[in-house]
Amino acid sequence: MVSTFAVFALLAPVGSSAVPEAVDAQIRNYYEDALSAARAEPHKALAMLELLLVPPQTSIYVDWTGVPPAVRPQFEVGLRRGVAAWEQALGGECPFILNGQGNGTASIRVQFVDALASGDPHTKGELRITRRITWGRSVHFTEFEGQIRVMKWARDGQYFTEDEITHVIAHELGHALGLGDTDRWDRVMGPVVIGRPYGKISPEELAAVQQFRNALEEEHARISALAEQAARGRPAVGSVGGSSALHEMGCPGCSDD
Image 1 (cartoon, rainbow, N blue to C red):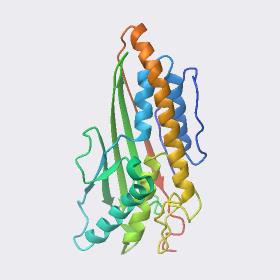
Image 2: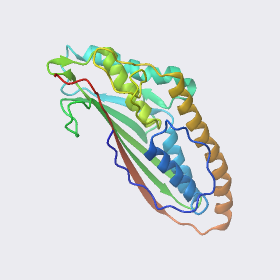
Image 3: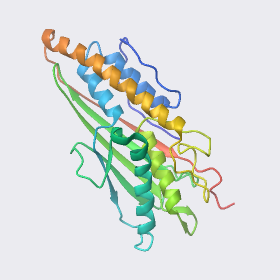
Image 4: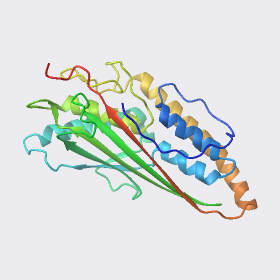
């Protein structure tokens, strides 16, 4: 995995809930930055936490440009299964909605491509997320924009199967929810193995996501109280901030050797 991240200046932290080890290190840093901002700028912290939770009804839509008509049906099935894996795991807590209206300020675009930015032939998928926040004394606004790019090709001359697409999509959405990569091939956050993909959310992965989301919600409730106090006693300030992250999915053993 290759990652880039723009973060905010650290202030003294006001508290922290436990974060599972499976959470990506850079997501963990962003979370800690949100807690650090809470006392001085609570609405900044609230906006950051809301984006880590992923806004409800984040719309997932597909750009089918360049996908041959004969291949599109299997890619569509794989895509639906990848999203459904998290829908079934999280139930009503799942923030994603495939091909829906969405909430207008949060979306993830999926594109099937011939090459990825890394140029690594073993990398089969990548997720780039941009988080934008605007905050003041008593209000904040957020924007969440993601792009999932998936290789069309498992290897030269061979398109991905439905099951392989399922694994890649579920993997990248796992990154959006905060999970990091693992070397285990029997985990959706592990590398996709051509011919033997793993498109299921393991109990351990689900537990990590749920624990992280619970921590985010607890801190959000706590900081909301700070924000109410700040709104009564501080002069108005307006600021704009943003961050972005790139996660790439590797595929050991996927070369044509």
